Length: 194
Length: 194
Image 1 (cartoon, each protein chain N blue to C red):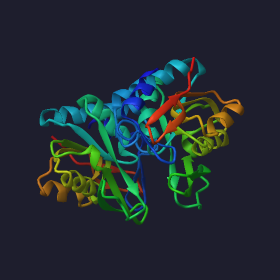
Image 2 (cartoon, chains in turn purple, brown):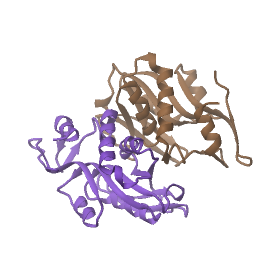
Image 3 (cartoon, helix red, strand yellow):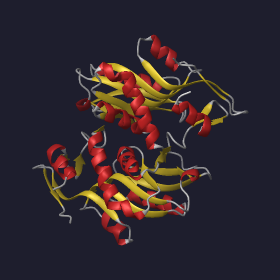
Image 4 (cartoon, each protein chain N blue to C red):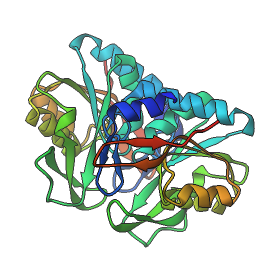
């Protein structure tokens, strides 16, 4: 069991509806030392792939992305959520449905910050159905950039996003993959990873 | 001239309507080394005040807050913007008007993450009219916490937020205070600070 799985077992809370609350250390209150451990783990995993930018989406991905980018010595670019579907010609955009909030956001990145030469490490806190991640992949590839790797903190392995995106050939590293949760007992089962 | 003022002069863009674009290094693309310089500057400024939490607001404050919190060895808490005015009893909330987006957000922090014993360093990327900062102060004080200091990257000194909040007795440190901007020439005038 790695450092993130241990922390989730100790402080995560399983709520009805397959909700895993990790807001005490990951996405509301942030344990910066934990972010740095995650950043270092992504660096070890993707050190050889020539990363030039770390791409994430506001807001919860930013802290992890900064810790990773520090290791790689590259900038972070974070995609912004825009209520408006009337986005300008100066941005790459993708539609991202949020099941948490029950709406659809345009997600945008300025064309000035992604280029065909970029090798992008995409980082996010959660991977479930893959909507946000698909949006980030769409944006990176619209820029002509290469998705060099994908680093996720917590993957919900019982939802289809991870399998679909790996099936398209992307190299997805999830530090913790939750294969099952039980809100009545609080039990969390992690996938064994090599 | 300090490191942030130099960077703003070199890469910031002045647009009509008193807009200062710093999205190449601060709030869309992020230069993590610059965040760390800012975090270290806030640490030097507020090292003696017993900070227990760094409080910011999503999304652009998070990177700076993480760099500062690493220096202090304390967690970050970021306030979330909520479209809903129907917030639960388990959160502290404040209304924050956004002039950029022309709307009003409820800004919320879970009651689990701020306590009467906390001495809070509030951090944000911009201070202009002070709406976001006032919301964060309201939330911290609703929790019974003490606002031990306020660290801002860029203050628009020609708007009233900084003067109003200093006038209420808060210790506000802005790394760059812009006293005037001219979109026609691109000129930026910084306030001399000791």
